[in-house]
Image 1 (spheres, chains in turn yellow, red):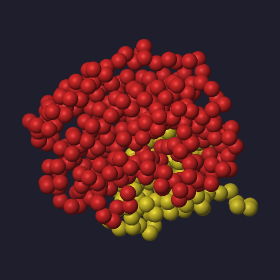
Image 2 (image 1 turned 90 degrees about the vertical axis):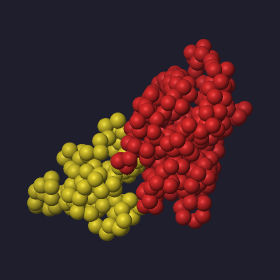
Image 3 (image 1 turned 45 degrees about the horizontal axis):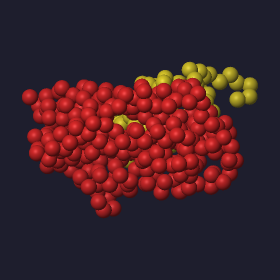
Image 4 (image 1 turned 180 degrees about the horizontal axis):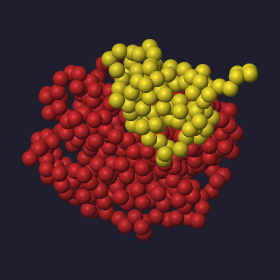
Length: 97
Length: 296
């Protein structure tokens, strides 16, 4: 953004990759839940809701690696890193990435 | 005492007796059985073309022969690593149950199972260490928490069976392929022989564990079980699209390469062949619909 210092959180909010992640999860919600989601709140619990479980975790990590261009370290994967869209953004797209 | 199911069935007892005798008769010392040459030739395939993740896709024609050989080397390392971690995981579950109340009848056979699986894990790891200088990592998975011990027992042994039958398809194909190096054929042949006993055992046990669930659970609960196992089959099949192998084989943009292969329609037919036996078994015992209810 020209002439403005964007904070990390603002940058994250504007990161289109987060929308792609949300879309990936929305597309899979129908097979996991009774109703297909259309949007996902940044603080919606993806683990408790079953959207991400140990079977889907790896595929999701591979999807993230395509978005970020970074090779996933499967030995370091923890479900807790994927609990909400906000956390995913911070861990994989933001300053913590 | 919580019994998992009525395992006190004459047929099951007879099968266990037969498989147990075979395990004793076929017993071998794995630490003396294998010829481990210092290296394996890197100018020929380590895995048949039809087992590679590029099979039945246009990608197979886009890669050079040298690239395909490299891919076969690293995809076979992926396969043996998958065995190591899959066995580690199933051993954990079986060890937890070998003397659990309810499992008294298969307990003795489970001892053979545990011993043999430990040896399989060793020789697959040895192959990876000797010829790949590494093992790929596979994370541990958890069974969907159904809050029901009987469902949990069923899912554990159904998962073991699905994994073993998928792996066995690869073992059998590689053992039969005369173009592969003898060491590769040997470890696949020996594993296939042992696994045929484990699979026969799995068929009997999984049927017996599912039978009471079918009458006791409601349709929604049964649907959850079948959905979980469908996801598990997909999960197993996805491991054969190994990002690690694509990196090590020098494939450009491995993540995009993997996504492209998974999206290739020709791969569905290849996957159906790999998973044909476990899917047929799960349909036979009623876990999956026979008709059009499911896509697998």
